[in-house]
Image (tube, rainbow, N blue to C red):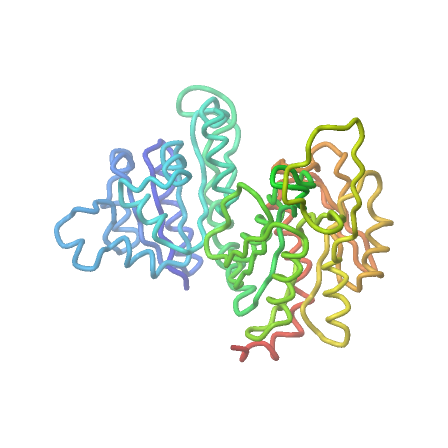
Length: 411
């Protein structure tokens, strides 16, 4: 049985949170309700106390609360923070680190997975500020029960209606189950671009944003894994709980990856090489002074950078771990190249995508891919990068299963 903190915000959908609490209990979970001040204007705290058989949290300054700093105590004990309904206000607080009530402080204090069920007016949901907050939370690993379409309390008809309680309970139950599937595992993910400096001003780079790698790291964390994230230059905030190693160039990334995988300490069970590593770097390194614009043509001599994934494949020869996953970003049908990469680099799975396809390019929140192994090619339709991360880890986990008995006692 898991302890779920059920955050309830001030919206007409607050009454459905009572059904969510009951549904969680029927699945064997313990529920602690956390009401915002406005939520209590829609549904009384006594209703939740009667259902959960626990005091309702909400006032950080209630007498006796500070005897154990209640929001910190609850943050330490819970296995899931579920917010139903999640208003535009609470999403903005979560996304921007504002902690001015019990629920927003609890969000900042907990390291448990977070699931939110947004509900609001159609135009509010589509507003760029709300969309940006949702994107930021997704990048940090927060999951969503998507709102439905239909008749809204404001009289409009459109998207923004709170998901049905049964769907919310099912999503929470799946998260609680998934949260244990990689417990005790160590996962290494590379993300973002590498850049190769030409001089103090210029560099060779690529369009990778790091979103796909960060989504995989967040999903692995949500499943209970210990995550090492080796990240090239990116403006994204890393998911909470990952140990982040910042690098700049391909050689730095190679050194960081091999140190994590081949060094002393806990063995790595899975490596997912998502980073777009530069293929070439200036021969002789970066110039000390800025290259002047004093000629019509400029010739640069470049040399190959280290192939990190191939080096991992060679190093692993004869070992049963780590499972190796590579990415192949191509223009045109990527499957043939992915199969060649799979064989040549001695890896277990390659995620291949045609970056020229709508929704599959660099920088966006969506992706389209084909998962290529030595026996099959599974097409994954357009979806968010977090959804692709879930599918990928679902496919990889069975490859980890035979290692369970040998890794349980690892330290």
